[in-house]
Image (cartoon, rainbow, N blue to C red; front, side, top):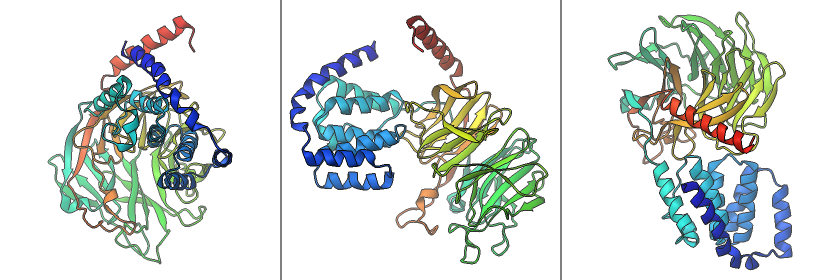
Length: 470
């Protein structure tokens, strides 16, 4: 009933903006500008133009640019929010309301009521509905809890990746700063586990790690990057993969991939069901696979169109890879054909901001840190090819700051609630005015209110079937 009321209010709001249509007619110069903008595809350049038009108070052109940006990346909620602002500045209530309602219906929450840009669209029932809805979406949802803490005297070691060793009931944390692998035991005590980093010959900073399928070994990707203590001009761009025995940290084998051109930065590690190690080389934007008993990786697919890939996972038989790009959303790769497609072809969902991804019981679990509010999401897949429904597992927890990466163990996901990465400058130094905070590791159930959501999905499908909606 509430949604029906909203639709009615939106239709009425079109009458309110009718008076503004005449003044929005375009001059010949504006038409030329619009044509140029519609041909543009370079996001950074368009963002600069958007900023420039706003400074010059060229509000019509400012709106044109954000319309183009939102069309280029329809699943980017920040772009949708800025589009709503651009409409509001033009006193286009319908455009602003529709953009904001799209965010609200996706469970997101952005500041509206005290933002100057939205002054023109205040004072209506639709506006009040949106403000109340945004507040509701900002409330805590889920039953996660903090299960381990790293003291702030160690959090500057940059533990950006964790795994849970259930055989020994301990967390393992990879340090980009020192290249060491630390462990947290059942009593919460932090100690070194693997300490073989070497600035001259490697390994270097521990960029990523993943457990083997049998939970008996650990893969660690290391690289010489500015945040690593031993970084120098001599080792810049160097990277390697190391394979360790999990029980005692003993080295099994090191891999230096000569068939991949330098510089190298290996990340997004994932071990498939067949024991294949998948990973991304950030510098050539290519996914590789290292087959068992192989010395060198094989190219799976080059994805130059995706420049912010954060995570890779695969389905039960490794026939599909799922790729999370922080800026562009979720994609699927057919491993037999090396063809890639989007999991949101209609641009209807907000899949950006995902920094880690897992395949669990036919669904995808995503850690979505780059939206507001940050949240854990479960994506219900249809035959591993399309997302039928998505719903949150955890959102707006009081411990959430910037979500880091995670790991799956049994029926739970463990993850970093407050990554310290954004406290540094490009050289790896603590930004002036910032300070390290105790690092918190959280645990959330993978099936929170799952039956309720699935029942809701079933009812929706029945309604669509009765109405002849596909």
